[in-house]
Image (cartoon, rainbow, N blue to C red):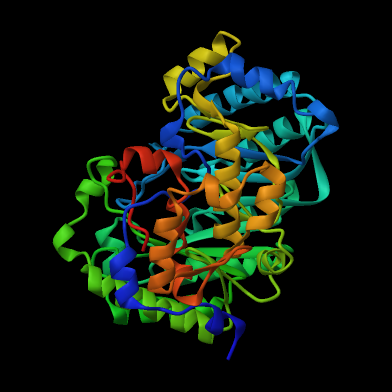
Length: 464
């Protein structure tokens, strides 16, 4: 039996009991806790204090590119549907302005160990636009030789020449959007994409020396069934991606207008989704993939798997990462950065974003400076999400607390989860047991002080 199989147990009864609405914990505090009182000046101040105390964290950069040619009905991203490259050309000029501002305020090294282009559809950009944006980044920052440079790719818009260009300008990792290969499912969510297009992009990535190719799938979409998912898994496993992300579709039409076009009557039931998830886990297990956490799987020799094995795995706004505790600079509309103990999110509309930069001001809408309590709870949530265990002794030493006393309110909830078989609680460790691994978000929520005080869980997606 593989390590994956011994470390993950699918228990439908437990999942039904603990499948509550909750955050994905790409940050703590979560973005819905950010406040407008944390503004451009506050963020600027922290950019200038990166090396306080002689500490200089590695640097990561996220670029949000919101443009898409067509709309996918399931999408919850901040996006702009257009075919007008005049709009993207203007946007790139403002990205350069923001890069210039952030670089001018930034204390310490400007060496990047990580770069990620997300969206929207980053490959909406033309070849000249991609070259221009990378040149702009390299004007202000230096990409280190062995860094992790990734881009999200829509196979419908990417030919062999584009993949070669991505490698030429420095990308070495790729995330390929697939979602589902079944034509009926694709039609129901307005994303028609042939298997050949997907296979060609992955083959071209390998031919151009990409170190890692990830595939994104979604379960819970209309028209999906066990048979359709089985075929999708057959096709994707045959392509042998290094990583897979298998997301639960979060149907929140009141928040995301495109989702109103989805026919809810065609969506699989809660029980059907559980059966689909069970099938996904079994098939990926049999194919040799390791369960990293939540909805991520990777090959045993992938850097994510190695980082988890060595205790170096980290979680940020792009999901799981091999680089622990980077300072994350983010540019573009709605992008969220993390510098020191702070988070800052940019304006969400182009007009507000452009207006701020025209005034020479960082386009920060809101943010937060984490308190010592936030940092303590964040370290626990990170350890749970990445490593499925928390050293109580290490916490007590690092944060100068008595765990039993500090978390007196939380311990009864942990005891309930222990009684249910999700975790083991001792004087020295919190350990997530195999049946609890799929429910690690629910376990992490026990330590979320904001949820404990407010109990406002309605706007989040289900844990499973």
